[in-house]
Image 1 (cartoon, rainbow, N blue to C red):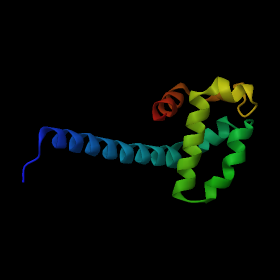
Image 2 (spheres, rainbow, N blue to C red; image 1 turned 180 degrees about the horizontal axis):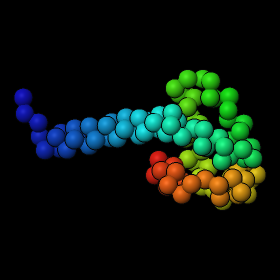
Image 3 (cartoon, rainbow, N blue to C red; image 1 turned 120 degrees about the vertical axis):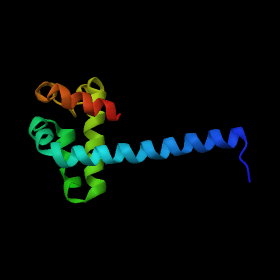
Image 4 (cartoon, helix red, strand yellow; image 1 turned 90 degrees about the vertical axis):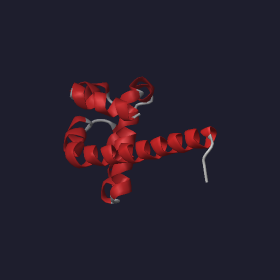
Length: 106
């Protein structure tokens, strides 16, 4: 059985897509396990982040949801600041390297 050029192209794109998905989830879990204390300390006044602490005790998927929520807040900060979910002072406390990592996740 031979694959045509189109089949090979779709297979390569699918493998790259799936591996990127797993790499992103792995990186989110890495950040959740190593940087969660820094994130909670930086966002202590932001309602949108402190309200999400219920996910902290819901296992692996809860940690992924917290990191995803925080990365969205950092990436689209003006949207969330206008609605009162994110404090601008909390965003200033976030280290620049961690901010860049969270933006790259989005």
